[in-house]
Amino acid sequence: MMAENRQGATKGMYSVCSANSDVLEACFQQAKEDRTMLLVESTSNQVDQFGGYTGMKPADFVRYVNTIAEKIDFPKKMIMLGGDHLGPNPWQNLPAEKAMEQAKVLIEEYVKEGYQKIHLDTSMFCADDDGDRNKPLDDEVVAQRTAVLCRVAEDTWKKYRAGTPKPVYIIGTEVPVPGGAQEEEDEVIPTTPDDAVRTITITRKHFVQAGLSGAWDRVTGAVVQPGVEFGDDRVFNYQKENARKLSEKIMEFDNLVFEAHSTDYQTEENLRSLVEDHFCILKVGPWLTFAYREALFALESIEIELLGKGYEGLSKLRESLDHMMVKEPGYWKKYYPGNEKEQDFKRKYSFSDRSRYYWPMAELESARQRLFVNLRENRIPLSLLSQFMPVQFYEVCNGRIEPYPEQLVHSYIRIVSGIYSRACGLS
Image: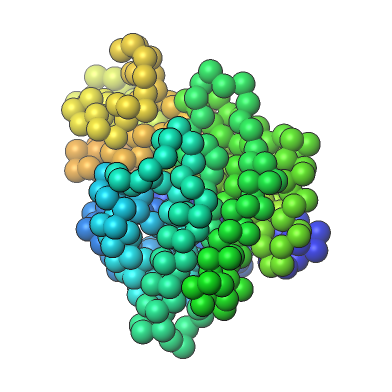
């Protein structure tokens, strides 16, 4: 696929960065229909040797993903698992030596459990690192640490996974540091070609010095900033001309393409342009769970219209969501500045979709189950479906799905996965 992309074909791969079971099931349905592999990734914050914020270790996440795939009879051999931003990121408050020891264990656990696409990211400052925190960490330090973690990955594969395909590696990180664009910015500046060349060249030097030339041949992508981002209610669209020189530069390196993060909410045309310009791997996460949230809100609107506002058995899903977010603000507070009214809006509708961290909680799962039961026991009228979920109305009318809540939610999520699939030339 990547070779075809470098030869000029509009071929790419989207990476599903989500642990939401409905999102994963919908994306497996998409890939099954397209007859393609599905790339599923977890981040170093999400899944680690201690459980991450999902409570899952790498072995748990592998079982979790495989169970969802089995549910819809998606072949296991067509699943590729990736680890995103694997490095000292979760332990930046520790001295570098201790943070890197934790990162080594993280890499070992990921590779041992069969993750094949490994993003080695050591770009973050640790507690005792010298340098201006407003500037990137020194390239030589980053590259040396990247090579150290690659050696761990190679040794782990040899010890536990020999006989299976060797890991492929992604290097580099976004500029600016991940976290979303600031609202007052007018544009997001792409990585300069010189910066991209320096990252690749210095990393290759450290790989060779560490005796990792064979591993370097499996470095397939470099993460850069092509100039795409999103804020709470704003999308920074891909500007093809602004990234032209960066796009051309990757062709100077054999076998490499670019990986683009934060591509959520781009138009299908923009995503296709990114793929054409060798930003071949497109990360998507918040947009998928944003669609999930939209679908649930639409179903609750149908529930209220169908049963009446005074019905005692309403799910009160939105109310439950906001209650949990206010009760436990740790996942959104520092990301949603503003007054009380503005924060109330962002908790529901921000593109960064911090609500995604709350759906697994018991109170919300109970509300969701009540919503689904209400809509199964009281069949959704087509007129209400047309009002609140018009795309799914046509899907039902065409006989592609039934008006059951699970199918409606998955269909809604597949609006997004379908955009990525078409943009990558997969469907």
